[in-house]
Image 1 (tube, rainbow, N blue to C red):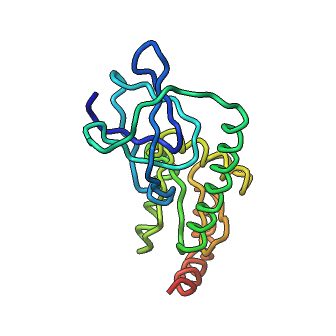
Image 2 (cartoon, rainbow, N blue to C red):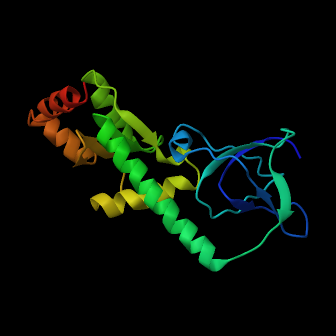
Length: 192
């Protein structure tokens, strides 16, 4: 088995042959590290199935890596893992929004997201951009969390100075009314 993939914590199962097997990981990598990673998987050799809480990078060529064990299923542990993941995800989102003057949750193929990023670039602002479509399975989970927090289910999802601004229409509207630049200046001053 060769190649590199990105999967999440705990006991992650994937079919290798007819008997169910899974990987058991020993060392954690925190979720904030995952935000900068792009998931990679060879779909022909691995079909991952996971419902876990922490992120791990796995290189199957690594000798002292994960150990193969028989998969076990527990519905109660998976639901608590899921809620634990959700609360850590929410903490990470709130921390990201608080610590960065401008945050844009985006999708790389979305024209509205591109318009907002271009507007910020023209204004000389470098937002902290999180491309949801580059996060693999965590992208839709993150988008659902953002919808729960903001009431907005579309991208881009823009935050300035820790406050939710809205999407493309709201951001452009603030720009045309002359209200965007003062918000950006205030947010940048807060974090400096």
